[in-house]
Amino acid sequence: MMTRIISIINQKGGVGKTTIALNMAHGFVREGKKVLAVDNDPQGNLTNSLLINEEIRCFSASLYNGKVNKLQSVNGHMGIMAGDSKLEIVQYNEQSPLRFSSVLTKIKQKHIFDYILIDSSPQITNLTFASIMAADNLLFPLQPSKFGLDGLKKVLMAVAKMKSTGATKAAVLGVVMNLVNRTKLHRQTILALKKRYPRDVMDCVIHRRTAYEESPIKGQSIWEYGKDERAQIEMSAFMREILKRLED
Image (cartoon, rainbow, N blue to C red; front, side, top):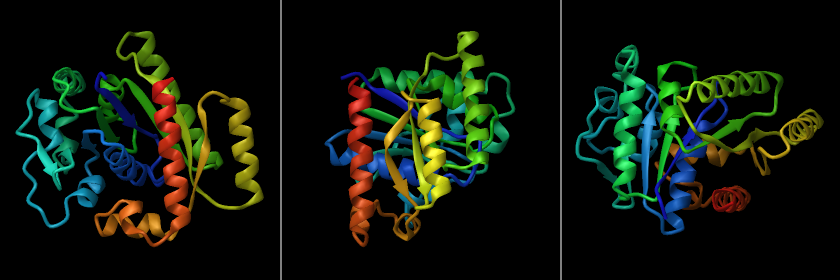
């Protein structure tokens, strides 16, 4: 199987993007896949969730300079390129997105990993453009709200513009409803989104649960955390649908 690069993006922050990235990385490992997690967010939340009390030796900012240090492993199960504040500086070079994409493509061609997951910055900047340029597939975590929908529209417009210029060939993997409350408003919003984007909106729904907030603090996936069976069930359903979409 060829390596697939999946970028997890949204124009709006606070949609649980990093929680999805964390559990998705662990979910692939649970399936026996090799994963490289690329933290492309200056806040470094994915890094802090995967590397607890460990010295960081490999930074994603190096990609924007056209190079990469020796990849760092997470508990021997996956590789990681850490995000930090240097990303705020390197992104301003006009050539930086192309360099980022070029180096990741070279890593992809070595077939060391089955999947490369990019956790992107929550604003549309060169960091986001770099993630889209490098990607084979795009995953959009979305909270079912007007502001969430507005954010999705903006990032889809950016993707369409990049495709029209040949800057990316990335295909939409899916839109996953995240941080969902059991309210009439959220139910109606999800139905409206499925009507508008019937192929893209995923069937699985990830609800707002305390376990999703607590597990990253301990550096654990939702399965390792093990304190909310419902969370494990719905995240497992999410992974099954992701794998099926990747096969299709």
